[in-house]
Length: 114
View 1: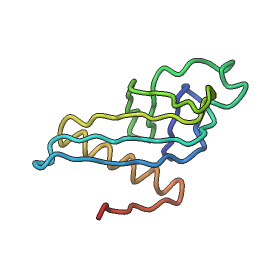
View 2: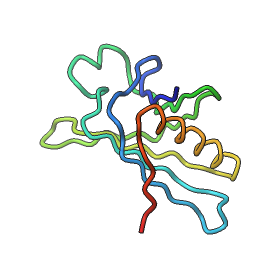
View 3: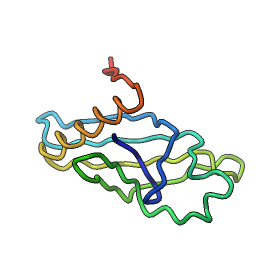
């Protein structure tokens, strides 16, 4: 099972939109996660802890990014955007394995950009 967490031990149930970019030689890339009204910004969640990063967890381990930003509309939290930087081909392969597991766990599909 693959899960996304912002506070260790609390799984995020809102499915993000994920956009991938990859360098021409395939050696680096980015994954931008956009969560619309995620659980973590709902009332009462601040008592469960502070957001320290985004944790992508599966049976192989945990991928971590601390590039996490809240989006506000009219002064109220509305979403979260997080950027995961992929620095080499091995990290790309590991990230894709996580995303495959996350997709299977949440009945998602991949749509290639046109």
